[in-house]
Length: 192
Image (cartoon, rainbow, N blue to C red):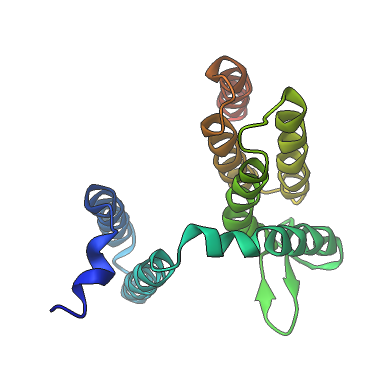
């Protein structure tokens, strides 16, 4: 017990509980909507356990060490998003690329985008100017635009939300962040 106690010491238990409750709600929704395909539920449950294991492992890495991967991961993700133009088309969307294994590059940006913006603002900590926020907006707009072009509205909105939240917490006024979010929300409502 003394060996394993330090592994759990830095965890935010309320946050972990909320994440686990959301995961359980997702499993419950999967069970109730598709139980006739029991293998899908079992596969989803297995994937949730794998994700929980990855969450635990990554939580052991100090954020400063993760920052080393920010620029390479972002650059690789954007390059792969550009390469998707030569990728695989399924159901009218060109979102996948075959690199020996079939991957969806937009998934990389769900992690790379907030990491890249956190790196960007950490490098400018204490000397933030409006131009730094504009540059962050460009860093965010490039992958979001490429993902929307596939088209993949859901993932582009997730990447946009992740990026905007980092920009907001870096110090941008909510009065400047809120209008694009509201406009996006209204656009989605109109599409639906």
